Image 1 (cartoon, one colour):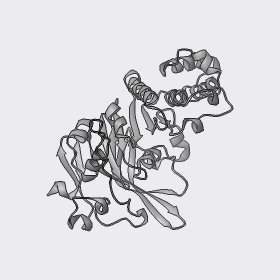
Image 2 (tube, rainbow, N blue to C red):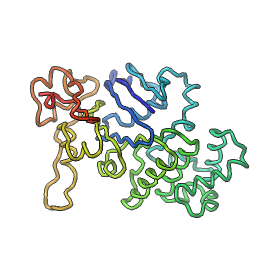
Image 3 (tube, rainbow, N blue to C red):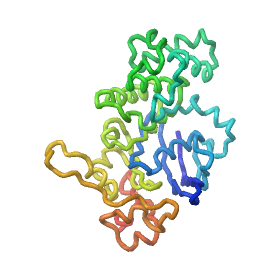
Image 4 (spheres, helix red, strand yellow):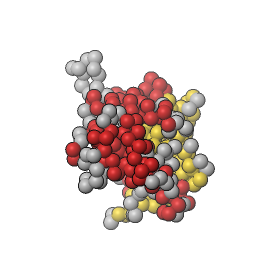
Amino acid sequence: MINIEELSITFSTFHGKVHVLDKVSLSVNRREILAIVGESGSGKSVTAYSILGLLDKNAEISNGHIYFDEEDLTKLSPNKIQKYRGKRIGMVFQEPMSALHPTMRIGDQLVNVIKRHRKLSKKDAYPIMLDMLKDVHFDNPEDIAKKYPHQLSGGMRQRIVIALAMSGQPELLIADEPTTALDVTIQAEILNLIKELVQKHNTAVLLITHDLGVVKEVGDRVCVMYGGNIMESGSVDQIFESPRHPYTKALLSALPNHVDRSERLQEITGEIPDLKNRPEGCIFYSRCSEGKSTCTEKAPACMQVSEAHHVYCWEVHS
């Protein structure tokens, strides 16, 4: 459905250009949940926002393409890409309170979105709005429709945001950290809801998260990002059971061990390199426990370990 090819993005700042993404390539298939995982600053959200042209004005796509059903979104004018937003590609933002209008009732917000994307009257949009609220597990949609965002809990607001994103019947749903700041029980409800929507509406999902537990719960495939590069990609089983990149291994080692709580958590020492002056070689070299001289000379090429399992690491090549 969507195919990103060697996407590079830079941000112009007072201190020079910051190379945020460097030749990122990934794809999302229909009815698939692709999870992009990595620590803060790895380029996950920038990758997602670039699909809908939601980057800041100081951002520039310096290389690459984003194909959605063979249409290159990077070549579209703001007016033309607007036709994709909400209608064919839905977006769930990180903070639901900032995504909802604070002075509008929930029902009015949903009806407005449905009217816009489905070209319906307010009268025809109203019952669809109630059905959308039922789809996101509200047993009392008429009551919820009358409420304002501040009258709902965080988990309820997140379900409303998902309903808004699905109101245009999109083929692709981009979910940027949809469970941030939610407790474990509500987080599980949101993840189960996303899986249900994939099955019911045949929607593909691009899930942005830093939580490996979320990835294991709902993902079909995983892309591990670091410093604006993809380090490793594969199925959930391949990534969790047979990780090959040192960064992926380090992330998994940092997960808490619920069996032995006395065991000290592993940490990834060091910091992400300055993206204004990206190193010539592997971006992870300065923090890698398996690095060698080759890693400093040239960025690693893609290595296919097995079907659908790819790694960008010179150690795997050797």
